[in-house]
Length: 204
Image (cartoon, rainbow, N blue to C red):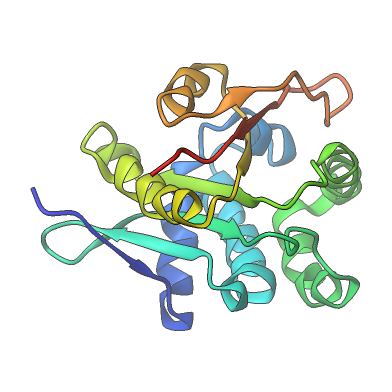
């Protein structure tokens, strides 16, 4: 099986958003933010599309994974060192779509984001904000290819990496790539937890 990882283009955003919406349909944090199970993939896709279009894409850290037919099956959304925080201007541009995505949970989403930002490491690092693959393709190496693509660059640059795992069962997977848990983060104040993870660069 061939796996292709390439930088995302603006024209990829609708498909990328749909793929991530499906990938996160069973995610505890997304389920807490969007309780409507039937509408969750579509509304999560609206959120992911807004985040990528108005914040992440211009930073050059968004990559997509394609299968051997050229079909997009996964995506990873990174911010380079010093650029993880969303500006006020970006937030304003995202707001209409975030209202569509979260509806009555918009305030909770904003408060969660603020708590995550307050706990975010200040040392320069690459930030893996989002990674996901279609449920039907899991276990076939697409996530591995997406992670390795950016982590190889981190190692070449001597740069650390950071993420927050929203599923405890994913922690061992990230540990295989060199990430280490730094604690627990209750960004939802009584809802699902996050597990912040830090990765020091590996010597080449």
